[in-house]
Length: 58
Image (cartoon, rainbow, N blue to C red; front, side, top):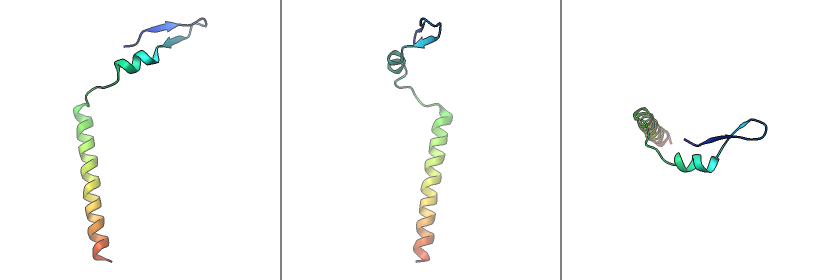
């Protein structure tokens, strides 16, 4: 985690560049992978359904 420092007013400051370097990449959680796959599957299924429906009703 990034090191916190205090400025003259006592407000904590964070080194953003160090935080971005540390948190640049991390693996997805299993639930995130599942949600992505459900969303992609639903989108492709709806796309296929709409193509069939509007292709037939043309």
